[in-house]
Structures are given as C-alpha cells and as structure tokens.
Amino acid sequence: MAESLKIEDKELEQFRKSQRRKDIIKNITIVFLLILLALTFFSRTIMNYTLPQVATHVVAQGEVSPRIRGQGTAEVDDPYNVMMAQSRQIKRVAVRVDQKVKRGDVLYYLEDNESEDLRTARQELASLQSDYTKKLFDGSLSDYDITRLRAGNYRSDDQMQAELGTANRRLESATKEASAAKAALDKLAASTDTSGGGNATVASTGTLKGGDEEDEEDEDVDPSPSSDDGGSSKKKSKAERDLEKATKRNIDAEAELEIAKSLQEKVVNSISSELELKSLQNQITLAQAKVTKLEDENIGASIVSPVDGTVINLSYSSGETAAADSSAAIIRIDGKKLTVSFSVTKEQAQKLQVGDEAQPQNYWEYDDDFKAVLRQITADSSDPQNSRLLKFEIDSAAVSAGDNVQLQIAESSKTYDLVVPNSAVRNDSNGTFVLVLKTRQSPLGNRYIVSRESVKVLAKDDTNSAISGAIGAYTYVITTSTRAVSSGDQVRLADEEEAEE
Image (cartoon, rainbow, N blue to C red; front, side, top):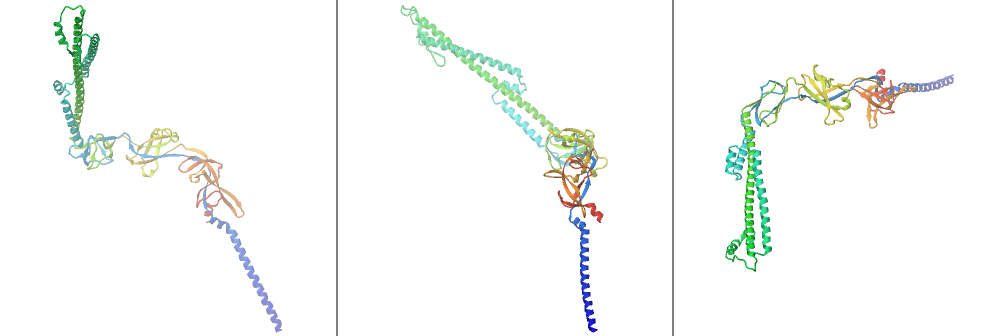
C-alpha cells in the first residue's frame, strides 16, 4: 500500500510539472500575442511619429488684390534755397531744423570781418587797373591817343573802320605805284642797254649814276652832228633823261610805299591797343561793380529768411566757413507739400491712375491723418522704356523732409479659380511648383504621399497667389512642414496629431 501511494505521488508530481510547462507556454503565447496586437494597434501611431508633419490648405476660388510697393525720401515740392552771396564765417546758428520762420527772421549770425571774396575782388580790380596803365603807356599809342583815352573818349567801330580803310587804300595805291614805277624803270634800263648808247647805269637802289656828268659833257660837244653819227648824240641824251625820270619816279614810289606801310601799321597797332584797353576798361567796370556789391553785402552781420515757411535743412554749424554761392538753408514755403517718388514697372503703372491713394507699409508709425495721393506718373529717366516714376503728395504731421517713407498702393481686386496661400508656392532651379497631398488607403488606415506639381503664378498679394497648372479645385497643397519634404515622401497631417491628443 505504501508503494501504491508513492506511485500516485510520482504521477501527481509529473502531472503538476506538465501542467506548469503548459501554463508557461500559454503565458508566453499570450504575452506574444498581446505584444503583437499592441504593435499592430499602435503601428500607425508609431510610424506617424517618424514622419514629417505638414499643414495643408485646400485650393479654391478666391480674390487676389496685388499691391505695388516702393519707398522714397520725402522732399519739399519746389523748396526755397537761401544762398550765400559770399564766403563768410558762421558765428552762431539762430534756428533749428523743422522750426517755423517768418520773412526777415535771422537764420545765421556771421563773424564781423571782411570776406575772402571781397579781398579777392579788390585784388582782381587792382590787377586790372595795373594792366590798363601798362598797356596805355607801352608805346603803341600817340600822345594824342593817350590823352583821348584817359578822358574816356573811345573811337566807335565805324570810326576805326574808316581810319583803317583809309590807311589800307593808301597802302594799296602805293603798292601799285611802286610796282608800276619799278616795271617802267626796268624796261627803260633794258632798252638803253640794248641800244648800247650812253654810259648811264642804274644802281640796285634805282638811282642814276653818271647821268649828271653826261649832261655836263653834252654841253661841250659839238651841236652840229657829223655826217658819221647821223644825230645819235641827241637820241642818247633823250634816253638818259627818260631813264632819270623813271628812276626818280621809282624812288618816290618806294618812299611813299614805306610811308603807307608805316601809317597802316600805326593805325592797326592803335586800333588793337585801343580795343584791348577798352576790354580792360570793361573788365575794370565789372570788377568795380563786384567790389561795390560785396562791400554792400559785407555790411550785414546776419543771414535772414526771405520767405515764410519751415526750415527743413541747415547746411552749416557754428564756426564753419560758408562757401560763396552755396546753399545755407532750405525752407519749405508755407502751403507747399512734401512729395515722395519711386520707380515701378511700366505694367504696374498702367494699373494706376492719378488721384489714387496709397497707404504706409509701416502704418503703425503714423497717425490716422496720414494721407498720400498719387499726383504724377512720368517716364523714369533711368529706363524710360520699361519704368515709370510715381510721385505722391504726402500730408502728415509725422513726416518731415528727408524722412524715408514706405508706401503701398493696391491694384484692383480680381477673382481667380485657383487661389492658394503664398506659403504654398515654391521655387527652385526647375521652376515654380506646389506640393500636393495624395491619399492612399492601407489596412492600417490612410497614408499621405507628397506629389510635386508645376504651376504658374498669375497674380499675388500679401497673403494669396492665383495659380494655374495641372491641379483642380479642392486639391490639398502643403503650406508648411516640420522638415523638408519632396515628391514621393510620406508625411503626416498636423490636424491628425491634434485629434490623437
């Protein structure tokens, strides 16, 4: 009986061991199944945490209102420039920028000393007067002319022309006579030499040598001609007398020619000197007037405003030297407006009209009284074919001359079939495109795949873009993503995460 009990105990022990093994296997199987079930159940959630998260927007019909933007410096329309008549040192500035002034109000107080311009003008006047005196007594004028010119009695152009004409005609006549006398003398001399008669010769100066002696000898000759010479002595005597007359004519003609040349030269020199002196006298008159003007202006010790208005610019500070003919201050005359100009494309300008109102881009910096009206549309000189210059009139207490003003003006709104947020439109080296969200179904739920679609932007405003392309209305496009995505990538939706939370 004891053995029977031992056998039963062993069988019971074996059964218990077998049952424990089965329990362990069952428990392991249950745990595995539970893990598998959990993995299957949460696989979509786990996968979603590894995918980039994107936000989308549906493509739909909508309005786009493009805006034209630009900026420019506020300038006074036709400002008044207060100019410096001469160089002076600034003692003190009496006004400040943006200060209103009345006509006669002092803008600058000047140092009470002679200007450099006045000193220079006096030196120029003294130099001209010295040049005039030197020219007057350089020997080119007669004593009569000097006295006449010192008295300020200058010949007129007609008088000088008449005197020069008389001298020229005398020279011309003397030249012709000298030429004719020389030709006649040469002809007679040649004829006498050819006949072989007489012993008279013509010197290079045209004077007769041996002529007087021959005349005296002719008185002792026998007046009755011999039968041999046939009266040749008388013929030689007449030829010699003709040659003597021709020689005297030539000498007189040459003397007259020298006198005519000298007279013509004196007239020319006299006229030239007188014209130069007249020019110097005119320069002296102008220089004297300049000195007088600067002396009158130099009396004042201040620069005052010539108009009522607002000071918008001061060129100098205390202690500085203001240059002559420079702008000392710029004043906006009361009633004048500020203007702002900037360039736009020709196409943009065609959408605007004079009278359109613009708004500031940074509107929070201005009060409600800000007003900008388009007053002028003109060709931009830098590119007249393709650009236009817009000129706006600004009315705002917050804007001063010299301020940079940023303006925007809306074009007319237009409705388009496909409108997306600006953030959905992307660009790369291959062109403009949007990322479209495609949906694929799977046993574990929907999967979202990115697809690239090329588009063309038709219009754009601050928030939206009108597009055209191979997409239709109610298509979802990606606007933002947690990291970069490209065509073919799987992504998760931002609103799905919110639903799970």
